[in-house]
Image (cartoon, rainbow over all chains, first blue to last red; front, side):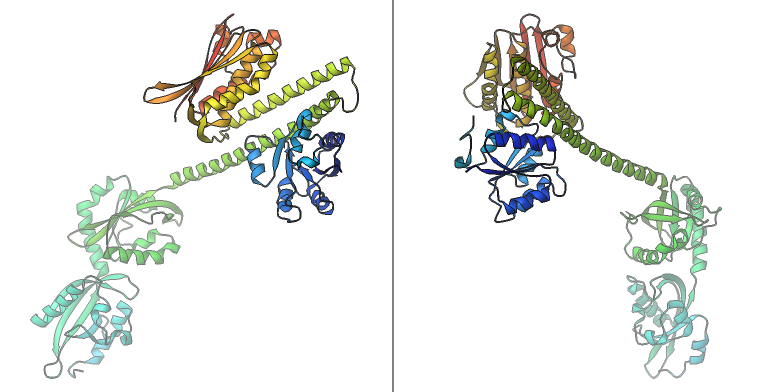
Length: 131
Length: 492
């Protein structure tokens, strides 16, 4: 069974890109365009991995990761920030906030899937270890 | 109680009259005494005079008055007395001894308030001695006696507070204070005379003077105790600090403005970075998916054109990165994290990551260093950014031959310094270009004619980072032979 990935992203073109890349690699995609919707979706259909933008309406990425990590039912789901905040220091701030990983935009589409798969257990990876 | 005393006489006298026993205990206390000292008859009778009106510290003087009166049968003394509210007055005391029952002795003290008289007298005497001297001082000077009266105010003080010549003499010092400070000041003042020392008044407090016309101005005051023949006094030097306060306030406001501007700038930079990257994400991303042929096959021309789009998008991204980093450096926002770095290992890693790029151009990438670790205390990120830029440039501009990285730890005086040089067999840089090489958006002739990609900010950024790390970045080059870029980093 394909792993389920939840994408929280408010920028339509970015959402489409991530969804396209991951579906093309066989992943089952859920998506939400704001932080609140993402949390609701995560509670209803716990995914295997969450890709989360930082700047989003209603609840931003930091608030989302905070709530996810304090919910025992969801805390073990890996959450990777994919964000256009990529100034020096942003990575450290993101990891300190509880995210399991950080990828900066613009993403490199050739590498993106294998980078994301590092946060999935081997058995759930479509590319089985990447390129 | 002695019978011989005429109590009515005691009660009616306008002066303060009190009857004491030989130890100073009050036996009688008239209305005059109550008016003068603030203690009622009930409060006073039965209490020793020492605890009522004697200024703390001068109990021996009081004992002396009593002893001398008993010894001589009468006595006249001048003394400072303390009222129940803590304020001080000058009195002249006339003491007499009376006989009560057999062997019973009592004293009758009649005390007259001579404060005003004494103020006038001391003022005159001090004026003749000090006025001229004080008028030559740049600060406002006011000399005050223990009862809080101004004995002398110099010309500057009169001018500061808006008074005519000699108008301040004999006024209570509290006249120069705004109403709200007066109560507390009387207390401080009386206290000061019991332990006088030179000090700044109200350190850390905002003090204000009150002009005759009712306006206030901020002051700075220093106090010095002074013993004169006539009386102990305190000299206050008063300075109007309106102008300085004004400057301080303006500076503080300016600081806040700068802080806000700085924050706004930070926010602007972060937002700009975010907003520029977001659309680029879609451009680079979808160009990538097309080139990966995920949606379907491409013909060779489509592939070529999409690669042009992707290269230019990446160039734009590199520019954004460099510009933002530069802006951060200029704003002093780069946080350096100095730690011990194994530079040999770092250079090894960078060389390994860039070697494929060199090999694809048929270039050799050589690393030359000692085998033992070269460890320096520096910021890893900044150092690698510089090395990546130098090696990347060398590979980019060299058509055949090699790129060589030399790493050594040299002695520079007492300290050691890291010397890293990147040499190439590229086209070299002309003397004229060499002089402006590290400026922004200046690229060598080669890059323009050979169409080599670059933002024109790499060396500019690298030199800024080198300086941030406490080091230097320099270049020597011979046209047609190659260039050597050298980074020196002294140990901190």
